[in-house]
Length: 236
Image 1: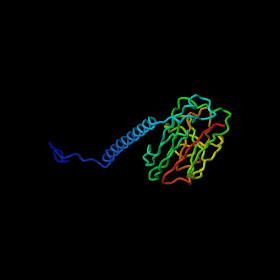
Image 2 (image 1 turned 30 degrees about the vertical axis):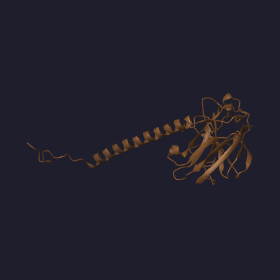
Image 3 (image 1 turned 180 degrees about the vertical axis):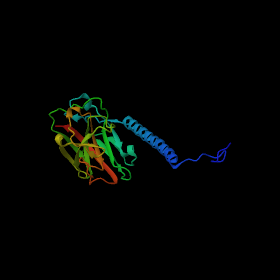
Image 4 (image 1 turned 135 degrees about the vertical axis):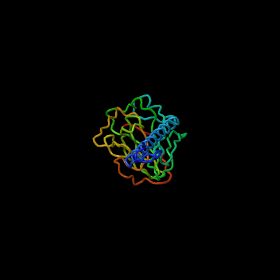
């Protein structure tokens, strides 16, 4: 005998809690799908960027570094497109032995363009007693940063060490950046208490970003073209 409840064949009543649980489950599934897609996009960008690495021009080496790989470096670009940004850059190895790093900054959803050396399997051979990184370059009036890595640059948990330097339009200058002053950051935020062991440095790079070496806004960062031509990098 039918009960006095819902009519036979009627849809069961679903309470608010059940609806909320169903929506939450769908939300988790959608969020997971987005995360998986985001990670896949990063990996595809990484593989494409590394595949496009260019050998440094003849004679361009990391002077003062002792490892053989410091004499035959390859360079590739990493832009904010990896995180959904719109900035873009490119490398040009010039016939006079310089590395030209140029591009266009788009601050809508973005915050950096950078280039760095390929390979993190072994250190570059920076001597433990080294005092500084010396940069000889021609800039455009923007503030750039030399970065040092002790791990794969795609490992988000590992900090990188950076030191800013300000350029003047069309002028070739030399900057001496003390290794003791390099600051550790992760995704633009300063990492307190980190210590740089130069003997473990596996990569060096040049970048232009929204944040300076201390994690503060870079006053020379903004939309538009940029170009820096690196003549030499030395460990002194």
